Length: 188
Length: 287
Ligand code: SF4
Ligand code: SF4
Image 1: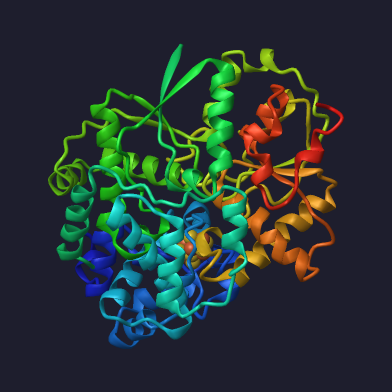
Image 2: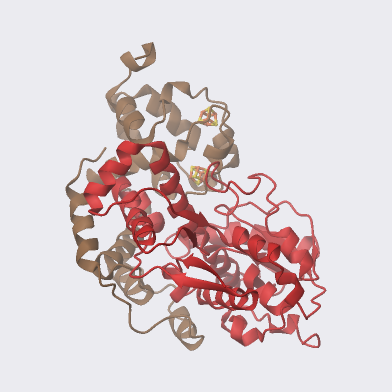
């Protein structure tokens, strides 16, 4: 065990155990933020998230778990690719997002994104595969976002891009069991 | 006939069906049999990854275990996101036997780590190595920008066949299809990925920047290998056109569609008629 591991905060420990990232290694060069395509929409930039996570106290954690930025990461892998310390800021954000989700700390601006992820997973849990029509219907129900893109569905059907009936796999009971186990499992 | 495992993934039976049609078509031309993994499930994509780190590994794990038990040692995953999830899981399992043990218990299936996952660029390179170009009959003569986006360029241990900052994995194929590959700066920029519905504004901004540069360097079309990139640049281009944020329509083709056209296949059979931005004029006269 290194010195920095001995002194690490509970947050730093959770981050290290789930993502492998040692927060103390970030030297705040800002390269992750410079290349992040979503940084311009974020209330905290990737390097600011790394800095607050290093602080790791209650005030920092509160700020981190309630920020919108966690939800705006699109998973483009740029930050991890370019970090000169070989850290993965997006993996840190994954850990924090999961914590925020479990504690139901979802900022209003991120609710549509969460609604989409949940609708996506609901279709997978039901039939083993993502199904676009049920996904969009469920997303619209959950997000209240009824008006956008109403014209796209009919166009996609006309272009034969969407199957009318979703395919359900034979192993769907197995998939449901996997979902149930993960739901119960240890989380950050 | 060479056989390759095939993982179409969910989007290839929906919005990304053109990728499925054209990949199957060029495999047939090259004499490669694609054997679909039986009873495959969704890889979980960014939704599982965003909310549950165990689920994000368990779903791809079941796919890998199925492939292995069905005797498929090499599996093509044409969707860039599926490829990244499956190969990323494979890499993590190789690194951590403990994770593998946990997943075998969770998924209740054995997996010995023998499956190799290929992306569309690696698949196309292998077809070229086996002489696909000899079947090309149509001279396309188009100016192309090759767009890799995120998941066909990045991931140090995932996209091992290419350079993250200067990906070239499509260039040779585009050239043998009789097209010119134009240099540009957006080849590995992000299009906004899975936020098409849930944060549409960011997709419009990022996709517009890519389309703007493609037009500025004089491209006739953008070639991609990713169904999310395709949907953002093609379907969301309608919105950009409507709001006059781009001056005109720019066709977006999958790499496999371009190669299918070079092989003389009918545009409709490759799925070109299903795009939002019309692209069939690219081969009119040359057909
Ligand atoms: S690029 Fe790496 S070292 Fe630099 S600020 Fe970001 S996480 Fe820290
Ligand atoms: S992975 Fe997320 S945080 Fe990292 S650069 Fe991409 S959008 Fe930004």
